[in-house]
Image 1 (tube, rainbow, N blue to C red):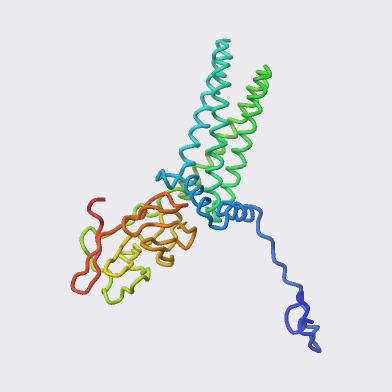
Image 2 (cartoon, rainbow, N blue to C red):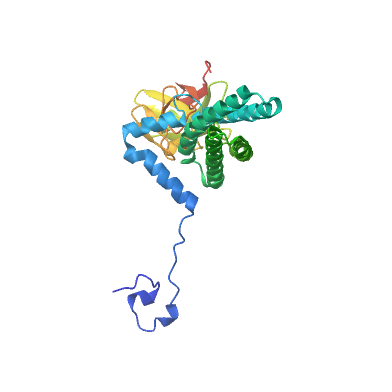
Length: 307
Ligand code: FES
């Protein structure tokens, strides 16, 4: 039987095959962050169950038109900032009301952080390798900050005020650094940003493809001055929209059609061909759609006037 750990002729046991002896190929294990991301994605996908998709749509913010995490994260940041201010006032003025306000703000922040963490984890399950590790560190730091604030709250309840304030200050410092990492993910790597932003589409009807070349039910990519446009013919109707997926730039022309919608090949966001609205996330931003007409045997498109 061939030895699976040996490659080359030796694997077949051939005579004189010693010189082909090579070290067994080692499959390097995938990095921890990648394995964790895959496991999380699998859990959230839950075998494609409808309920799981709806839950994921909710966490991603598909219903909101913005990443839910971006909204929820303001809650702990704001609440913990207020807690820091109330702590300072309580120390300065020696007033019991300020101490109580700090405790309340801290508890609100912990609850908000827990919600933001769940939404953030759903977003992280789809990010590309260039930000995967940064995203994981961001998440772990936030968990650490939340744990410190929760500890601070418990200490305060036990009237260990000084310990509670020190723990909270430490948690706040970690949160600030983590917020910096989150900012880098958005402003540098454009996570959660509409990837079609800045794309230029024709203002007036412009021929992009001979009509005869547009096959029924076949997503087709055409280009206008370097901007890819998706054309789909469905019987008598022709649809046109940005070909770049608004989520993470997946090529929609390589996706597949489900009724009058297109599914992205990268993370399976589903967009209505009629108006580009997101039917299923993780995308949260709609696809820009174009007006289409056929003139002199050419498919012509232009920017939707209403937009
Ligand atoms: S790139 Fe993520 S769904 Fe299209």
